[in-house]
Length: 108
Image (cartoon, rainbow, N blue to C red; front, side, top):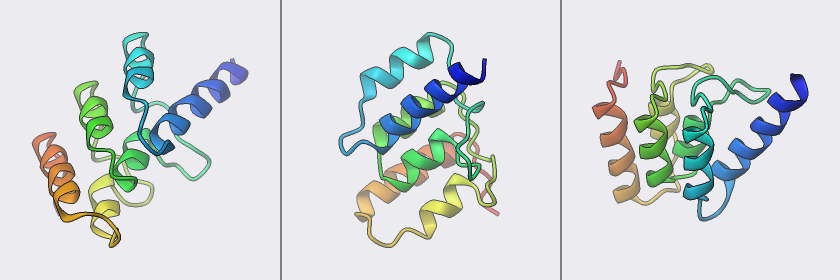
């Protein structure tokens, strides 16, 4: 139902948006069948895009391990959103870029 969809969206984006990233809560949702690619916010952003923009390396890896598609666009991919982030530690950026490239993110 639309109500269930709205609830799932609220949980997934709040997990990705939390300061420390509630990895266990997200893992449980994914194990219960949440499709990492199915839900987007009103702007078309996916959970992977949110996690990338917020520098949550562990959440990025978890979403990718559950088949989050790094090449979905809104209008840019998660990788291109990351490139535009200036206020992020370089080691975090490097870890996320590695994870996205390993998951076959389009680099062009």
